[in-house]
Length: 368
Image (cartoon, rainbow, N blue to C red):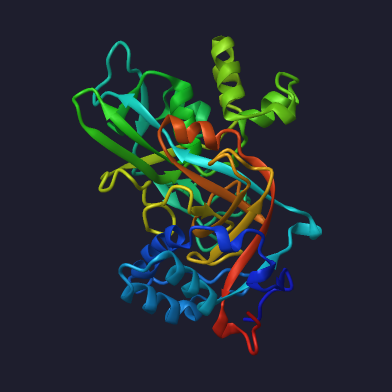
Protein backbone atom coordinates (compact mmCIF):
# COMPACT_ATOMS: atom_id res chain seq x y z
CA UNK A 1 0.00 0.00 0.00
CA UNK A 2 1.62 3.31 -1.05
CA UNK A 3 1.86 6.19 1.38
CA UNK A 4 -0.88 8.78 1.06
CA UNK A 5 -0.08 12.18 -0.49
CA UNK A 6 -1.34 13.50 2.84
CA UNK A 7 2.28 12.99 3.94
CA UNK A 8 5.07 15.38 2.95
CA UNK A 9 8.62 14.25 3.71
CA UNK A 10 10.73 16.38 6.05
CA UNK A 11 13.99 16.02 7.98
CA UNK A 12 14.46 16.01 11.75
CA UNK A 13 16.05 19.44 11.38
CA UNK A 14 12.65 20.70 10.19
CA UNK A 15 10.94 19.76 13.47
CA UNK A 16 10.74 22.81 15.79
CA UNK A 17 12.25 21.97 19.17
CA UNK A 18 13.13 18.39 18.27
CA UNK A 19 16.55 18.45 19.89
CA UNK A 20 15.16 19.76 23.19
CA UNK A 21 12.46 17.13 23.67
CA UNK A 22 12.69 14.25 26.16
CA UNK A 23 12.87 11.39 23.67
CA UNK A 24 13.42 8.91 26.51
CA UNK A 25 9.88 9.48 27.80
CA UNK A 26 8.50 8.84 24.32
CA UNK A 27 10.71 5.76 23.95
CA UNK A 28 9.22 4.24 27.11
CA UNK A 29 5.72 4.62 25.65
CA UNK A 30 6.84 3.25 22.26
CA UNK A 31 8.45 0.25 23.95
CA UNK A 32 5.11 -0.73 25.51
CA UNK A 33 3.62 -0.97 22.04
CA UNK A 34 6.69 -2.92 20.90
CA UNK A 35 5.96 -5.63 23.47
CA UNK A 36 2.29 -5.81 22.50
CA UNK A 37 2.92 -5.97 18.73
CA UNK A 38 3.96 -9.68 18.61
CA UNK A 39 0.85 -10.64 20.60
CA UNK A 40 -1.64 -9.03 18.23
CA UNK A 41 -0.57 -6.93 15.24
CA UNK A 42 -2.01 -3.47 14.85
CA UNK A 43 -4.23 -2.76 11.86
CA UNK A 44 -2.52 -0.77 9.09
CA UNK A 45 -4.25 2.59 8.64
CA UNK A 46 -5.60 3.63 5.26
CA UNK A 47 -2.88 6.29 4.86
CA UNK A 48 -0.45 3.46 4.17
CA UNK A 49 1.91 3.27 7.17
CA UNK A 50 2.36 -0.51 7.07
CA UNK A 51 2.38 -2.16 10.49
CA UNK A 52 4.92 -4.71 9.27
CA UNK A 53 7.41 -1.93 8.58
CA UNK A 54 7.74 -1.37 12.34
CA UNK A 55 9.21 -4.85 12.93
CA UNK A 56 12.87 -3.80 13.11
CA UNK A 57 12.18 -0.81 15.38
CA UNK A 58 9.97 -2.89 17.65
CA UNK A 59 12.59 -5.65 17.91
CA UNK A 60 15.32 -3.19 18.87
CA UNK A 61 13.04 -1.39 21.36
CA UNK A 62 12.30 -4.66 23.11
CA UNK A 63 16.02 -5.38 23.36
CA UNK A 64 16.95 -1.99 24.84
CA UNK A 65 16.00 -1.83 28.50
CA UNK A 66 17.66 1.31 29.84
CA UNK A 67 18.75 3.79 27.15
CA UNK A 68 19.75 7.33 27.99
CA UNK A 69 18.12 10.37 26.39
CA UNK A 70 20.66 10.65 23.58
CA UNK A 71 20.30 6.95 22.74
CA UNK A 72 16.51 7.33 22.68
CA UNK A 73 16.78 10.25 20.27
CA UNK A 74 19.18 8.30 18.08
CA UNK A 75 16.77 5.36 18.05
CA UNK A 76 13.97 7.42 16.53
CA UNK A 77 16.25 9.15 14.04
CA UNK A 78 17.70 5.84 12.83
CA UNK A 79 14.40 4.04 12.41
CA UNK A 80 12.03 6.75 11.20
CA UNK A 81 11.50 9.54 8.68
CA UNK A 82 9.41 12.57 9.72
CA UNK A 83 6.46 13.33 7.46
CA UNK A 84 4.33 16.45 7.78
CA UNK A 85 0.68 15.39 7.92
CA UNK A 86 -1.64 17.70 6.03
CA UNK A 87 -5.07 18.36 7.51
CA UNK A 88 -8.27 17.83 5.57
CA UNK A 89 -8.32 20.26 2.66
CA UNK A 90 -4.82 21.38 3.60
CA UNK A 91 -6.05 22.83 6.88
CA UNK A 92 -4.00 23.10 10.07
CA UNK A 93 -4.10 20.25 12.54
CA UNK A 94 -5.95 20.32 15.86
CA UNK A 95 -5.20 18.87 19.29
CA UNK A 96 -7.54 18.45 22.22
CA UNK A 97 -6.91 16.75 25.55
CA UNK A 98 -8.30 13.84 27.53
CA UNK A 99 -7.58 12.35 30.92
CA UNK A 100 -8.62 9.67 33.39
CA UNK A 101 -11.02 11.15 35.97
CA UNK A 102 -10.66 10.10 39.59
CA UNK A 103 -13.88 10.15 41.59
CA UNK A 104 -15.32 8.78 44.79
CA UNK A 105 -17.63 5.80 44.29
CA UNK A 106 -19.59 3.20 46.22
CA UNK A 107 -19.87 -0.53 45.47
CA UNK A 108 -23.56 -0.34 46.41
CA UNK A 109 -26.32 2.19 45.90
CA UNK A 110 -26.81 4.51 48.87
CA UNK A 111 -28.75 7.67 49.57
CA UNK A 112 -25.76 9.69 48.30
CA UNK A 113 -24.44 7.41 45.55
CA UNK A 114 -27.27 6.97 43.06
CA UNK A 115 -25.70 7.20 39.59
CA UNK A 116 -24.50 3.86 38.18
CA UNK A 117 -21.66 2.94 35.85
CA UNK A 118 -22.92 -0.05 33.89
CA UNK A 119 -21.25 -3.13 32.44
CA UNK A 120 -22.02 -4.40 28.95
CA UNK A 121 -25.55 -5.84 28.63
CA UNK A 122 -25.94 -9.38 27.30
CA UNK A 123 -28.25 -8.27 24.50
CA UNK A 124 -25.77 -5.69 23.11
CA UNK A 125 -24.17 -7.17 20.00
CA UNK A 126 -21.54 -5.99 17.56
CA UNK A 127 -23.02 -5.08 14.19
CA UNK A 128 -21.40 -4.73 10.78
CA UNK A 129 -22.30 -5.04 7.12
CA UNK A 130 -22.52 -8.82 7.53
CA UNK A 131 -25.37 -8.79 10.04
CA UNK A 132 -26.84 -5.30 9.66
CA UNK A 133 -30.56 -5.37 8.80
CA UNK A 134 -31.70 -3.40 5.76
CA UNK A 135 -32.49 0.17 6.68
CA UNK A 136 -30.37 0.29 9.86
CA UNK A 137 -28.11 3.35 10.13
CA UNK A 138 -24.73 2.25 8.67
CA UNK A 139 -22.96 4.29 11.38
CA UNK A 140 -24.09 1.89 14.11
CA UNK A 141 -21.46 -0.61 15.24
CA UNK A 142 -23.64 -1.99 18.05
CA UNK A 143 -27.25 -3.14 18.16
CA UNK A 144 -29.79 -4.89 20.38
CA UNK A 145 -30.45 -8.56 19.79
CA UNK A 146 -34.14 -9.46 19.47
CA UNK A 147 -36.01 -12.62 18.50
CA UNK A 148 -36.50 -11.11 15.06
CA UNK A 149 -33.70 -8.92 13.72
CA UNK A 150 -31.18 -6.67 15.50
CA UNK A 151 -32.49 -3.19 16.27
CA UNK A 152 -30.88 0.06 17.37
CA UNK A 153 -29.87 -0.10 21.04
CA UNK A 154 -31.45 1.98 23.78
CA UNK A 155 -29.95 5.47 23.86
CA UNK A 156 -28.71 7.54 26.81
CA UNK A 157 -32.08 8.99 27.73
CA UNK A 158 -33.81 5.61 27.63
CA UNK A 159 -31.11 3.94 29.70
CA UNK A 160 -31.08 6.69 32.33
CA UNK A 161 -34.87 6.48 32.50
CA UNK A 162 -34.62 2.78 33.39
CA UNK A 163 -34.46 0.71 30.18
CA UNK A 164 -31.80 -1.57 31.71
CA UNK A 165 -33.02 -1.53 35.32
CA UNK A 166 -33.02 -4.85 37.15
CA UNK A 167 -30.27 -6.51 35.11
CA UNK A 168 -27.55 -6.21 37.79
CA UNK A 169 -25.20 -4.35 35.45
CA UNK A 170 -24.01 -1.82 38.04
CA UNK A 171 -20.23 -1.85 38.58
CA UNK A 172 -20.18 1.12 40.96
CA UNK A 173 -22.31 4.08 41.99
CA UNK A 174 -21.37 7.77 41.81
CA UNK A 175 -22.83 10.80 43.53
CA UNK A 176 -23.09 13.09 40.50
CA UNK A 177 -24.58 12.51 37.05
CA UNK A 178 -22.21 15.06 35.50
CA UNK A 179 -19.20 13.14 36.88
CA UNK A 180 -20.57 9.96 35.31
CA UNK A 181 -21.06 11.72 31.99
CA UNK A 182 -17.47 12.96 31.84
CA UNK A 183 -16.28 9.45 32.66
CA UNK A 184 -18.27 8.35 29.61
CA UNK A 185 -16.56 11.03 27.54
CA UNK A 186 -13.08 10.02 28.73
CA UNK A 187 -13.79 6.29 28.48
CA UNK A 188 -12.14 5.35 31.79
CA UNK A 189 -11.83 6.39 35.44
CA UNK A 190 -10.10 5.63 38.68
CA UNK A 191 -12.60 5.04 41.47
CA UNK A 192 -11.78 5.82 45.08
CA UNK A 193 -14.18 3.30 46.59
CA UNK A 194 -15.85 3.96 49.92
CA UNK A 195 -14.51 0.61 51.15
CA UNK A 196 -10.93 1.88 50.75
CA UNK A 197 -10.04 0.28 47.41
CA UNK A 198 -8.63 2.07 44.37
CA UNK A 199 -10.46 0.59 41.39
CA UNK A 200 -10.59 1.36 37.70
CA UNK A 201 -13.23 1.12 35.01
CA UNK A 202 -12.45 1.28 31.33
CA UNK A 203 -14.40 1.19 28.09
CA UNK A 204 -16.17 -2.05 27.18
CA UNK A 205 -18.75 -1.05 24.55
CA UNK A 206 -21.27 1.64 23.68
CA UNK A 207 -24.87 1.89 22.64
CA UNK A 208 -23.62 3.00 19.23
CA UNK A 209 -25.35 6.27 18.44
CA UNK A 210 -23.40 9.34 17.38
CA UNK A 211 -21.70 11.41 20.05
CA UNK A 212 -23.02 14.94 20.58
CA UNK A 213 -20.90 16.96 23.00
CA UNK A 214 -22.63 19.19 25.57
CA UNK A 215 -20.29 22.04 24.62
CA UNK A 216 -21.64 22.03 21.08
CA UNK A 217 -25.22 21.87 22.36
CA UNK A 218 -24.74 24.70 24.85
CA UNK A 219 -23.02 26.84 22.23
CA UNK A 220 -25.85 26.33 19.74
CA UNK A 221 -28.36 27.26 22.44
CA UNK A 222 -26.44 30.48 23.13
CA UNK A 223 -25.56 29.43 26.67
CA UNK A 224 -21.75 29.42 26.28
CA UNK A 225 -19.85 31.14 23.43
CA UNK A 226 -18.09 28.51 21.32
CA UNK A 227 -14.66 30.03 21.95
CA UNK A 228 -15.24 29.70 25.71
CA UNK A 229 -16.34 26.07 25.70
CA UNK A 230 -14.07 24.02 27.98
CA UNK A 231 -14.71 21.17 30.35
CA UNK A 232 -14.53 23.68 33.18
CA UNK A 233 -17.08 26.06 31.63
CA UNK A 234 -19.44 23.17 30.88
CA UNK A 235 -19.22 21.90 34.47
CA UNK A 236 -19.84 25.41 35.78
CA UNK A 237 -22.95 25.73 33.60
CA UNK A 238 -24.33 22.42 34.84
CA UNK A 239 -23.70 23.44 38.45
CA UNK A 240 -25.63 26.67 37.86
CA UNK A 241 -28.49 24.87 36.04
CA UNK A 242 -29.04 21.52 37.79
CA UNK A 243 -32.62 21.37 36.52
CA UNK A 244 -31.40 21.26 32.89
CA UNK A 245 -28.72 18.55 33.17
CA UNK A 246 -30.88 15.81 31.64
CA UNK A 247 -32.14 18.13 28.90
CA UNK A 248 -28.59 18.74 27.71
CA UNK A 249 -26.99 15.36 28.37
CA UNK A 250 -29.75 13.35 26.73
CA UNK A 251 -29.06 15.14 23.45
CA UNK A 252 -25.92 12.99 23.39
CA UNK A 253 -27.62 9.69 22.60
CA UNK A 254 -24.42 7.65 22.87
CA UNK A 255 -24.03 5.70 26.14
CA UNK A 256 -20.84 3.97 27.30
CA UNK A 257 -20.57 0.62 29.09
CA UNK A 258 -17.54 -0.30 31.18
CA UNK A 259 -15.53 -3.20 32.54
CA UNK A 260 -13.45 -3.39 35.68
CA UNK A 261 -9.67 -3.20 35.32
CA UNK A 262 -6.66 -3.28 37.61
CA UNK A 263 -4.55 -0.28 38.59
CA UNK A 264 -1.20 -2.01 38.10
CA UNK A 265 0.93 1.14 37.96
CA UNK A 266 -0.47 4.36 39.41
CA UNK A 267 1.89 6.37 37.19
CA UNK A 268 0.20 5.12 34.01
CA UNK A 269 -3.28 5.50 32.61
CA UNK A 270 -5.73 2.79 31.58
CA UNK A 271 -5.12 0.23 28.88
CA UNK A 272 -6.63 1.84 25.79
CA UNK A 273 -7.43 0.90 22.19
CA UNK A 274 -3.83 -0.06 21.35
CA UNK A 275 -3.91 -2.50 24.30
CA UNK A 276 -1.14 -0.83 26.30
CA UNK A 277 -1.34 1.52 29.30
CA UNK A 278 -1.44 5.17 28.31
CA UNK A 279 1.55 7.31 29.25
CA UNK A 280 0.73 10.82 30.56
CA UNK A 281 1.99 13.47 28.17
CA UNK A 282 3.26 10.90 25.67
CA UNK A 283 0.23 8.94 24.41
CA UNK A 284 -2.04 10.42 21.76
CA UNK A 285 -5.38 9.28 20.38
CA UNK A 286 -5.66 9.38 16.59
CA UNK A 287 -8.08 8.37 13.85
CA UNK A 288 -7.44 4.63 13.78
CA UNK A 289 -9.00 4.24 10.34
CA UNK A 290 -6.29 6.49 8.90
CA UNK A 291 -3.29 5.91 11.15
CA UNK A 292 -1.51 2.83 12.46
CA UNK A 293 -1.28 2.39 16.24
CA UNK A 294 2.28 2.58 17.52
CA UNK A 295 3.22 5.35 15.09
CA UNK A 296 5.28 8.12 16.74
CA UNK A 297 3.94 11.64 16.11
CA UNK A 298 5.92 14.78 16.76
CA UNK A 299 3.35 17.45 17.59
CA UNK A 300 4.15 21.15 17.41
CA UNK A 301 1.45 23.26 19.10
CA UNK A 302 3.18 26.52 20.05
CA UNK A 303 0.06 28.13 21.54
CA UNK A 304 -0.49 25.18 23.90
CA UNK A 305 1.25 25.77 27.23
CA UNK A 306 -1.11 23.98 29.64
CA UNK A 307 1.16 20.95 30.15
CA UNK A 308 4.28 22.62 31.53
CA UNK A 309 4.05 26.33 30.78
CA UNK A 310 6.11 25.95 27.61
CA UNK A 311 5.02 25.67 23.97
CA UNK A 312 3.97 22.06 23.36
CA UNK A 313 6.56 20.35 21.16
CA UNK A 314 6.65 16.67 21.99
CA UNK A 315 7.09 13.23 20.53
CA UNK A 316 3.91 11.24 21.21
CA UNK A 317 2.92 7.65 20.45
CA UNK A 318 -0.43 6.75 18.83
CA UNK A 319 -2.03 4.45 21.39
CA UNK A 320 -5.72 5.31 21.49
CA UNK A 321 -8.61 6.53 19.38
CA UNK A 322 -12.02 8.13 19.87
CA UNK A 323 -15.23 8.70 17.96
CA UNK A 324 -14.59 12.47 17.89
CA UNK A 325 -11.00 12.05 16.65
CA UNK A 326 -11.38 12.09 12.89
CA UNK A 327 -9.04 13.31 10.18
CA UNK A 328 -5.33 12.91 9.43
CA UNK A 329 -4.05 15.86 11.50
CA UNK A 330 -6.24 15.39 14.57
CA UNK A 331 -5.02 14.22 17.95
CA UNK A 332 -6.24 13.90 21.53
CA UNK A 333 -3.40 14.25 24.05
CA UNK A 334 -3.51 12.07 27.18
CA UNK A 335 -2.81 14.37 30.16
CA UNK A 336 -2.82 11.75 32.93
CA UNK A 337 -5.12 10.83 35.82
CA UNK A 338 -6.90 12.89 38.46
CA UNK A 339 -8.04 16.48 38.89
CA UNK A 340 -4.74 18.13 37.93
CA UNK A 341 -4.70 16.25 34.64
CA UNK A 342 -8.32 17.22 34.11
CA UNK A 343 -7.45 20.90 34.51
CA UNK A 344 -4.92 20.49 31.70
CA UNK A 345 -7.05 18.35 29.39
CA UNK A 346 -10.12 20.53 29.80
CA UNK A 347 -8.55 23.60 28.19
CA UNK A 348 -6.66 21.98 25.31
CA UNK A 349 -7.99 22.99 21.92
CA UNK A 350 -5.09 24.27 19.86
CA UNK A 351 -3.83 24.39 16.31
CA UNK A 352 -0.92 22.04 15.76
CA UNK A 353 1.43 20.67 13.13
CA UNK A 354 1.61 16.89 13.03
CA UNK A 355 4.72 15.03 11.91
CA UNK A 356 4.25 11.27 11.60
CA UNK A 357 7.48 9.33 12.09
CA UNK A 358 7.20 6.72 9.36
CA UNK A 359 9.44 3.61 9.37
CA UNK A 360 12.55 4.32 7.34
CA UNK A 361 12.23 0.98 5.55
CA UNK A 362 9.29 2.38 3.54
CA UNK A 363 11.64 4.79 1.77
CA UNK A 364 14.51 4.68 -0.62
CA UNK A 365 17.16 7.33 -0.04
CA UNK A 366 15.37 8.93 2.92
CA UNK A 367 17.26 12.00 4.12
CA UNK A 368 18.19 12.68 7.75
